[in-house]
Image (cartoon, rainbow, N blue to C red; front, side, top):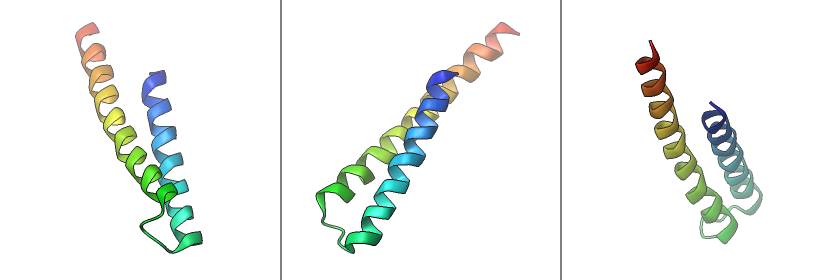
Amino acid sequence: MADVVTSIIFFLLFEYLAVSAYVQMRHIIEEVFLLRQLLAPLFLIAVYFSTKTYRGVFLNLQ
């Protein structure tokens, strides 16, 4: 359960930081924006797989 919460927090954090970097700089080609925008979907994928794993374990226990 901790991995689900952690990946959700980091997804929201990196997406928020990417949007705030874009608003401040107004350039899409900035390295900070691109790095944060690249990390956000990776954590979204982590949310998907950790939720899928947690759900599979929970359903097998019942």
